[in-house]
Length: 137
Image 1: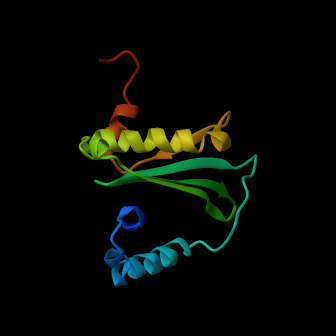
Image 2: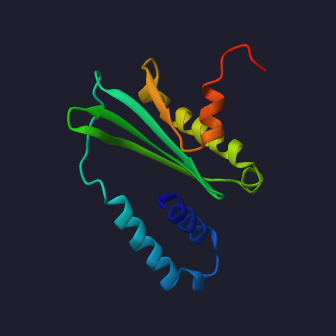
């Protein structure tokens, strides 16, 4: 949902016509601020916490969230989203999900480098590919 809103905002920002920035743009800015305000707390990266990156992709964008596990449960630390280029939009669902994982790990690298982390995705073929034994074709 947040990726779709972000994608719409990006399209509105790139349009040159002032008519497109009317009520439609105002609605998307308001709904985006409501969605991003869901987590009002600020947590800091703890050196002893388990980390997880949750990735997802859509037809138009990719997104991810970095979480840490504490005694209170999973806490979101940082978010990432990027609108896909026209070429990337033609990728298969598998390739878009793999691209989302790659971009997220690259984006969160300063926070996860040298640490063990878990990558969560909802794309079953990608999960299956990561569970394959080494050496199999």
